[in-house]
Structure formats: structure tokens, C-alpha cells
Image (cartoon, rainbow, N blue to C red; front, top):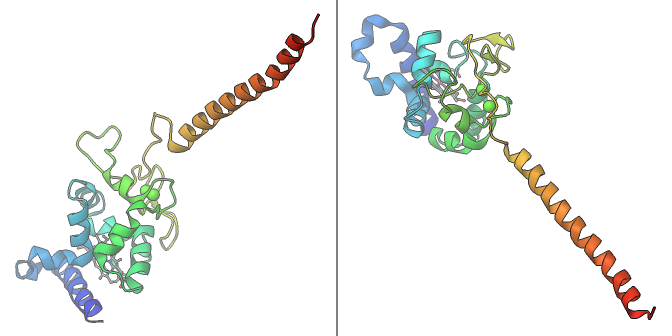
Length: 198
Ligand code: HEC
Ligand SMILES: [Ca+2]
Ligand SMILES: [Ca+2]
């Protein structure tokens, strides 16, 4: 409970600091970010997603939030919030969701966050809570509102995906098994014909 109080305090201060620019100098950068944003940056220091969200939506908080804190979404934040409600720390919740596909676009959160952006040299990261070619939020209110206007689902890789490799391996295994079966089936026949005197 103390934990949650601390979070609320820091988060409220974050909102307060970013909305009231007059008191901005009073806010240390640590308190402005809040525990989720801090834990996130510690886990993914090389991702340029926060800077990109800042440039496109005027707030790096939109890595997780929809358009403003207090509004439903995005899907990634909703998952984080669920784990937090179960008593998990922000850092543990972020860890736990690394391999989960929160926005359902087929790519796990951690992979999205660290994927170099196609055609944007130096830019790393697709938003794990937004999908499609225009960065819509399936968990927003209203749902599917455009948030970034740019792709937030990584393009499919050019090499075979894991499931495609699986198919290839299965096919090869099937062919091998078939060859062995055929060889077995022919052997007795050959033996019979050899044993029978002509
Ligand atoms: C890594 C994800 C992440 C980032 C980045 C982030 N937040 Fe949050 N924020 C959350 C989660 C998760 C909750 C819900 C916590 C809970 O369930 O109590 C939340 C809740 C809040 C709330 C309480 C109201 C609400 O929407 O539930 C405020 C205010 C808030 N954040 C402000 C900010 C500000 C300001 C920033 C940017 C400086 C920021 N957050 C960045 C994840 C994040
Ligand atoms: Ca995803
Ligand atoms: Ca995505």
C-alpha cells in the first residue's frame, strides 16, 4: 500500500509538473517521469520510442498512455496496470510483459520496443500499445483512434518466421520418415524374391 501511495504521489507530481510550466524548475527530472517511465527507460535504454512519442504526440508519456494520463489505453499500459493491481512492481511488470503481445499486432512488446524502424535510420522502437500503419489504439476510448499517424506494427521479417521454420523442419522429417518406411516395405519383398529359387 505504501508502494501505491508513493506511485500516486510521483505520478501526480509528474502530471502537475508537465502541466504547470511555471513550476517546472522545481521538478527534478526523476520525479517528472514517475516510476513506470523510469523503470521502462532502465529496461530499454537504447529504444528511441520515448523521444519519438515526444516528437509526434508532444509527450513521451504516450509510450504507455493514450493521449493523456487518465484516459483509457494504451493496450500496453492496461496490461501493466493489471499486473500492478496484483501487487507487482513497475519494473517486474515491465519484465513480465516483455514477451507478451499487449496490442495483439503479432509482435511481443519487447521485440517491438527494440526493433529498428524500417526506413528511419537510427530510430529504434514500435509502440507496444499501438497497431497498424497509422498507430491506432485498440484499447483507447474511442477505440482505434489514431495516435501517432505512423506505423506501430513492425513489418514482417524477410527471413522465415519461427512457425515457417517449424513447417520446413516438419516437412523434412516427414520426407525422412516416408523414405525409411518405403525402404522397410521394400526389403521383405526383395528378401522373399531372393529366397525363392527361380
Ligand atoms: C512504461 C509505461 C508508463 C509511462 C512511460 C508512463 N506511465 Fe503513467 N501510468 C502507467 C500505468 C501502468 C499506470 C496505471 C497505474 C495503476 O494502475 O495504478 C499509470 C498511471 C498514471 C496516472 C494516473 C491516472 C491514470 O491514467 O491511471 C498518471 C497521472 C500518470 N500515469 C502520469 C504519467 C506521466 C505524466 C507520464 C510521463 C512523464 C507517465 N505517466 C508515463 C504507465 C506509464
Ligand atoms: Ca505487439
Ligand atoms: Ca505495436
